[in-house]
Image 1 (tube, helix red, strand yellow):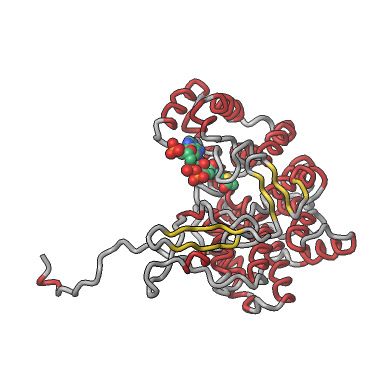
Image 2 (tube, rainbow, N blue to C red):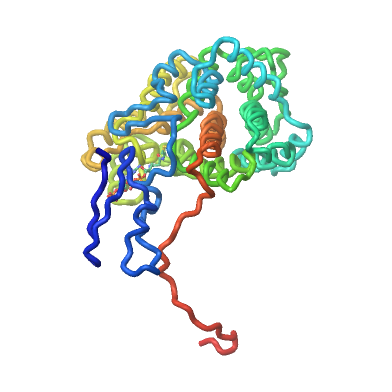
Length: 428
Ligand code: ACO
């Protein structure tokens, strides 16, 4: 028997049967519920989409209570252990782990597209010397749409494939350029002999040596961090990507918007905020006073809490383990002890326990990035590079979904009723 929800409208005494499918009811099925025939009908009110599914998706699954994260069904722990970023990106984009030949072809295509048009480089040179790299990144990704007008062919699978390769290939180059610009050093051209992560490290850190050899521990750490950040279902930036894409804008414009959403301190800017917070706290002795202030509502414990995870974020667990390997290679980050103590105290404190606030992916990632030599301004950029795989996959899924239309929420209007314009000299 089909599952339904019976609703009684006590304004009219009428009853309605609303179908339940996949654990949801369709919000538009409520529109039939009205008192007078010329009324608009019942709507739902759900600021910040706290309980509204905006799409059907087959990409990423999260069980927030159990701390489970799957990409296309594969557990994040197995991918972080055994895969590399390009393979994981291919999985997220296509739905299946690639066969060897598909993987080789994909890797070759991405490697062939890593160079930037010289005018993109010139555009980036125009930024002030102290420009925030994420601001440079967002603007330059948006500018890519003017370099690749064929990207407007969003319903052509071949065009989408080409833009996907360009984005996955060029964003590390743009990120590296932004970094080199901000430290006043010349840009390093990509090195096609290196892996995706190795080439990125080379573009960032190569100095005068003819051949840059990435430290294998840091190269692997970069791959793992990229895998952990590759997708996370309908978060703020992904929803932005889908929303902009729903107007049929090209993927570069949509992705610039998604990256802008990621920039905020409540989303991708959180690990930058974690380090600033640790610096502000200053020493282990000041932690109890800091926790007291957080509990009094005077600020948040950054890197803690998540809209979906109500237990330990599985990505944070992997990162915490990886931190030891990285610190063996780079030397310990002096802020680590403070972070560990902060976590220990918070996990025992009733305020955090009762609200199910646990460390999220950003609590430890900043410490690793800093130990690897990244300034905090680069953190959101490091997040945006791998998330590009998820953004594109979600955008394509939205375009191919017959249920989707241009995103256009409703509102509850509480403003003034109609009134007549009063000339300025007559206003009181
Ligand atoms: N520190 C202190 N209190 C917190 C925190 C925190 N980090 N996070 C949530 N709370 C409290 C809120 O004050 C609220 O308490 P109340 O019920 O007494 O009012 C309760 O917990 C619920 O919080 P909400 O803000 O309603 O939770 P929401 O799901 O909207 O927020 C968010 C999720 C934005 C991640 C939040 O936990 C937060 O601001 N965390 C810090 C920023 C951060 O680390 N962001 C990274 C997220 S992961 C990512 O984007 C990759």
